[in-house]
Amino acid sequence: MIQPFPHYQTRKIHCLDGLWNFAFLGDVATDDVHLESMEYRDRMAVPAAFDAMPAYAGMRGIAAYRTTIFTTPGTALRLHFEAVSMWCRVFVDGQPLRDHACGYTGFWCDAPASEKAEREVVVLVDNRFDFKRVPLHEMFFDFYQWGGIIRSVWCHEVPASYIDTVQVRVEDYRTGAITARIKIAGAIPQSVHLTSRLDTEGEQAHGEYSLEAGWAELPLQINNPHPWSQAAPDLHNLRITLSEDEVVTDDMIVRFGLRKVTTQGTDILLNGEKVKLLGYNRHESHPQFGPALPYAQLVADLQLLRDLGCNFVRGSHYPQDQRFLDLCDEMGFLVWEESLGWGQRERQLTDPDFIAAHTTQVEEMVAASINHPCVIMWGFLNEAGTDSEYARPIMAQTVRQLRELDASRLITYATMFGKTDLFLDLVDVISINIYPGWYGCENVDEPLGLVAPEIRSFCEYFDAHGFKEKPLLISEIGAEGLYGWHDVLNGFFTEAYQAELLRITCEEVVGNDRIAGVALWHFSDARTYTGGYALMRPRAFNNKGTLDEYRRPKLAYKAVRVVFTTYQR
Ligand code: ADA
Image 1: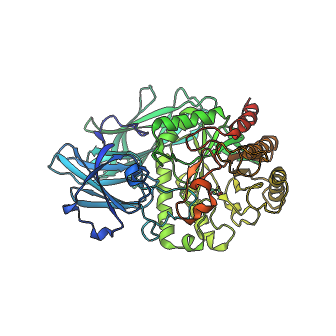
Image 2: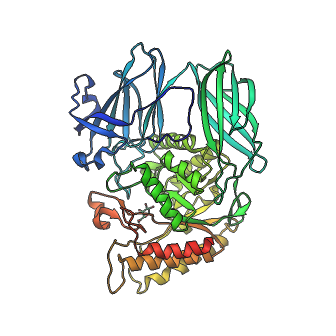
Image 3: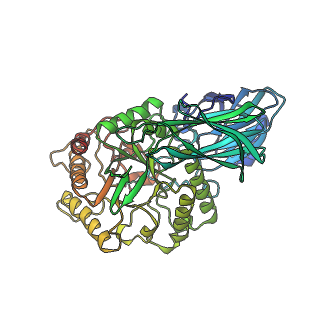
């Protein structure tokens, strides 16, 4: 198991990854599930998507997971689930602690202290589509949504007062001035005794800090600051310790980078220098493991992206595995992280439960990812109904929420409406999903001839309609290429057609100064619909990957690599 940041030195942490007791209950109501009489006849790996595993492939319903842990008697526990898909209810020693309803964000459960050393954790997981229960998940999304405890689970033994959060705000990336924002939870005193240590430097702040609504702020100075950039992704560590009567009671170590992301006219700047974003949309998806990718696969994916000459990943279409973001921090990738969403319209976007669930999800996403220097941009609600007024409240509210939570990153959303989108004035970067040469070219003889002119027509349109000063990103573009499919006509679905479409796109992007970057659709083929929607998707995969689902390169790999690596040189 790999523990993503933050790390801890003082508190005892148990990793609950491994083999859990398991029972698949199927299509039953939660009220009809009785834990006391539950028979766990099987075992299941955690983390894993149970419905990606051979014995339960494709099954939807309720599953019960159970494990036990030995903890220190009399100590309160905090369970950290990095992601459970899609809905879950967590019990400790038979007591329900909380429900959670989004498959891609982490959450915490507090379990009161007990005199018993052995504690039992049970999780009911539901992967059925149900708008009331999981308003953020819909079966019409063009990617398979798996069920299970899909990311790691941790159990923290915590003292009465403990450190909940450490956020680093970079005040000046050149001088190394930062502010550490620290949230204390549990019993919240008026003030706390805090110490900080940066990298291998000595202790800096040392003293009593008063809390405001549980938060303390420490202005700090790094003596030997190294900015974070793509070429030199230098990282810094900050350890905060909490003590009582000279005894350290808790600590937290966060990792961060000194960098600044801004826009200037139509450009995106990293540390004051123009950067062209060249990369891919990437699903966390594997034919064998679903969304629970082995660590080595995460590293392999980034090695492939680096080899392709990419510097950018759009985490489509949900908050990312923290291990992946840690790797992007270390390898100098720039990331767009976004909330879960795909093509929602009025029914969802105006529903109070949907809005509330989305607000919670955005909070959880930002809380988990705020210290990653790789994340330069927040996105939300891919291809929502942004050509209609009904979407205004949720779009405006989400932008406001993101700016309040984090004023240091750019905000965007991927629109499929381009020229008729109503809310582009709200965001820092315009991001368009366009498919010239693929969708909508039924009556065209030479569809590849549409690609460059259509890209240029968007540039001209936005310049002429009040967005001359806003960066423009192509957040999706691509074509299906079936791995191994070659044909003398080089038409739709051949590797050759896909390669040529991506080559033209990449040439246009690197040669066109108006365009701030591209996220090609997409990195690797990804499993999608099982029902009737699959008729639009050969093999029931979205086949627009430059690599297939096993990461075998198609012809497009070389085509993209030549253009991107030549540009990066
Ligand atoms: C959309 C969507 C992607 C994918 C793509 C496609 O732009 O955002 O998730 O479905 O279309 O392949 O058609």
